[in-house]
Length: 306
Image (cartoon, rainbow, N blue to C red; front, top):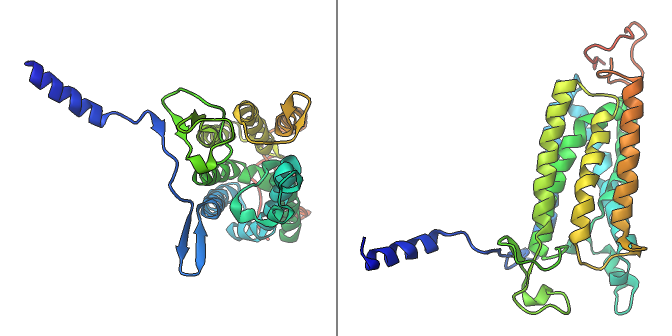
């Protein structure tokens, strides 16, 4: 092969090569007349839809009634959004109440910023209310929804990508994230690449969701154990991802608040899984809070007749 041919071949190979970095979207808002369509809100909405679809399928497979899911989601989602925003503001207060901060922006949820722990806490309260109204057991529903939560969180991280926020420290890895000058943190030169923590968490959450579904099918987990494993898996990933991030956040000692929260919550979930596993084997005999008196006590297929 001649030198000219080799040069041409090398040029074609270079053209087909993957880029040495991940570009950030040029915009995160599209105006539809007077109405702005924000990528962050769209990612959250798509995540919720995906979670509902997966949860409905899992709930029915476990013996539940499909309509229960939407009724419970009606309570869980608003509570979760409020809780997520409150936790974000508490854990990152400087942007709102620090020097040069804007307190009113604490309500500007469309600009991004939801804390998962607040979302789980208040979202869990909303789900509990919904479960009581539907007459179903909260731990059983939590097991059904757990993989869907991970999928929703994975999709939601795309909103951070569009907003060019919550990325990690500088990196020379070939998948470094490009950040435009308008979103570049102070002290970093233009063109610096950063760890794409949105992508790390997206991939981790999808993998964790697959693991949960496999474990649940393999071992017939119930009584809240799937949800406990969800918390263990999520906190394990969030711990190392959080250590990469450089966005301003409240710290306690050497670590960010979210690091400590991941450690405490993850260990608590692990203990809960062990304790519940010693008390219960298999799944619930019924998904109902007040099952008919004629039902047996042995752990067989769940009953959802109403």
